[in-house]
Image (cartoon, rainbow, N blue to C red; front, side):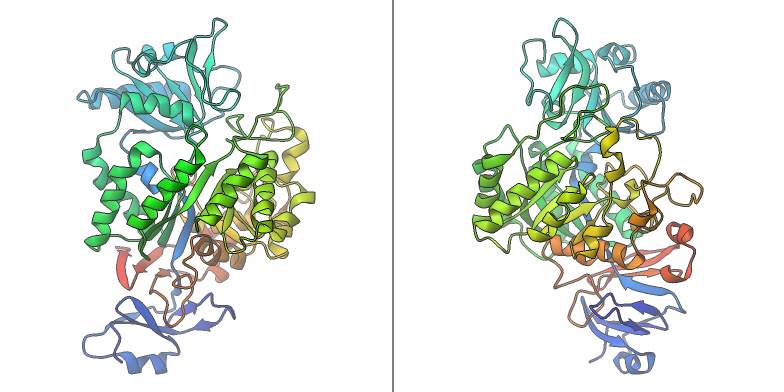
Length: 540
């Protein structure tokens, strides 16, 4: 057999079960056909074989972003990209520039501001009215769990003092003493009431936006994406574009998708919708097979479900689903043959996931893949339940950095992003960026570094998160960006390691991860990326 591509003279880290190293890899079309020595690889070189001399560079399996929102991000990228370090005055100035540059638009959208922006002040509709009063405007925070809109947006959406909150205390409109909405919006259901009404996105620009996101991921060495859902009003247009790109051979990543189960829709309808999507989209390149639950918010937006009130509050935030209802959702999803992925950041929300998982396992559904997304605050006494009930722990290591934690209940501050014990007991770790809520970027190399250092990448003097005893190793972070992320999405048997028979999903790094200072990992250039044996990125 002559190969279509042969890689020689590399430091090939296979990430197989034995953690073998090799010198060379041969690829025939989309699959790996040989892994071993330079001398043996030469037998696969023919007249038409493309030969890559790696000259000592590192060759790895392509990275997987195990939890992200590329479809959601393709919509959000059509608006104003707000830097989370911008202050209020900068946001106002940049918004005015954006509006002036796009006079043809009927409504304006932006995303990315810091949830810490307001401190003791609260955003109001009047602040945005001063910039734009005749067209709707809505801006979302970086995490997407709070928003800020002008008076026109509320008017177009028909939201006033008589409008009920979607989930009181969790998904709601901030109000003044008379009950009138102030322009500050908490959580996705309330935000989407505004966004659906004002229609700020131009669907004609979606394909270009999505291609740019796929290109960006390819440049970061990413060959698979775990999409953690977009909203219902986005699905039809974006899924058609992805299918069109798949048919044309234009996809640069394997994509595993999901659909939301939200409080405002009966869960039976969500499962039926998932079944329809799965029948339509189910290949190794693009498959939708997961029900996504949004069960709490974020600590920064004061919407995470904790067992302790936030500083200054007297009551805790409720979860959307719990107890028998959540158990039934899990069991019915398993019965239908699908997996479940739960956004649960606070310790109370995570306990609800674990309770649901217990019910699913005790009902006999052992094969269902249950993932707790973000997994920020796990109390020590509950960590073993992830192992007991076979729950995958997803998180985002570019959030592993220290700093002012005064927004968190003091009792819970030491328990943020502590995975050492869980990994040691064999809990599967899934790492992802949560793009577009990524703050420091989508690049897995940044995530690997911050998983090791628990500091902002490239800053050895920056404050570290809780305790350095919780640091992960390079191998553990690599597992999270390959096997763990792919196991979540049922692709671990077809990609994620450099082994004969697997898809040729590969990334070439300029330097060996194991040979550089840990604070330099984020700086290592990605030289080339291959997905299904096809080059998707080459550094110029």
